[in-house]
Length: 346
Image: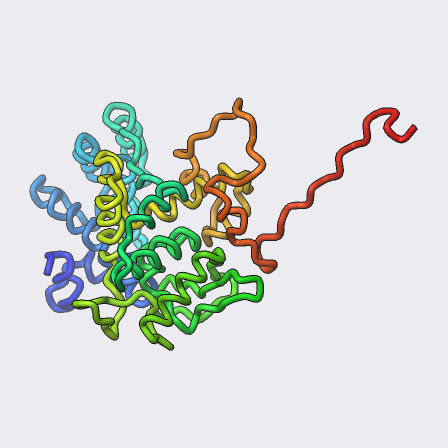
């Protein structure tokens, strides 16, 4: 158990900041609470080595920590560390030192001198996904790999969301497509707004998986052991491992394969939707985001040639023409009738 986790788990041994961050428990996901504790623990260790007070901290102390972090950390990492410091002080009803002028200057200085763009997972677009699918074997492990690749892409799912899918939450729609209930946390109540829609081909794979495994309820993506389906859900690391194994089998270039993660399915689907002409609002709704700025961050890596002639079909081949074409979410766009040429009716 890491030091930050021990501090959160033993009330009698908690320092002041850990006891304060423990107030988040139940209101935030356990992983979020642990992340805040881990980042503040790192800050507290730095303060101890520098002979400074971590809680409460002043602006000069936080500014020094920002300057210390930037040479080896990306901008987003420094932002996460500041958020942990801010959260601890807000929960303790203490003045927030992260907005002090010295901190803002240190952040801008570090970003200009050492800042580098945040690394984004390589987009696993429909074209690359189909290469991976073609390399999947026909056994049960290969069928689960197809399930992960297709459902993760169609639903724009995070790894944790993919693993939390339930058999009871899957429904096949009359037009041959499907939908599945997405839950951000285990205790989430079903919300009709959090539905992921699946293409016809993906729905067929889900049905084939259910027939072959005999599953009627419980986790959809199951752990496997020697060709046997286990009762519990697969680990989140299974998503990454499945993608990387499929990439090796498909002969994907090593430089690309190293950048493929479980998040690549979500990134690739967003880039395909943007390239096919979907609006940011449509993509926001499909990916269940709350802010358009997040969607813009995802699509910034999509290659767009504004001078190329626009294709009549969406990116990804014939199958993607039917992607998410459920009447409840994606209605085909109306095509305006072409204007008659002058004198055509004479």
